[in-house]
Length: 148
Image (cartoon, rainbow, N blue to C red; front, side, top):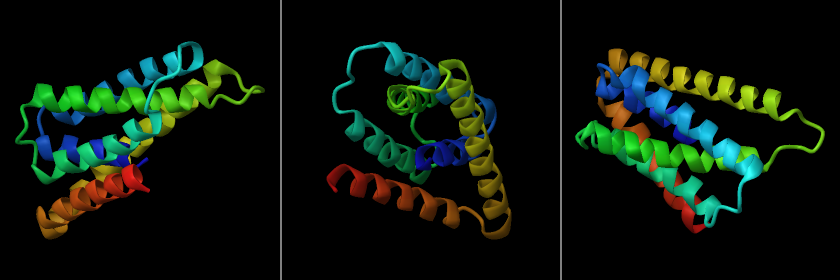
């Protein structure tokens, strides 16, 4: 959830096409990862990949989109594959893969929108500092998740 909120924040910070493109790339790559999780082989270092994605999205926010947009989007896509794989591999035996997948896509979209809305409100109220603080908190959370 933290990475998804972060993608919404990063998208707003980056502006322009990134506002829609960042979440769209995440959702598309997450869906592909989910399909792999449902059907594919084991993904090595799954938990580390999820944790590192939180760290990297936090760093994207801290750097205010200074990374070339294609590189940032590639980072977001890689993070999303890990998140999707985790969702797909956790499909309950009694659940419909279609409805389960649709649920995590809809929920992810909502979380991206929440991140963008929160970033908009914070930026209007207090400028960029709160966004940098959120990026630092995400990066710090990623570090904690990686090591603990």
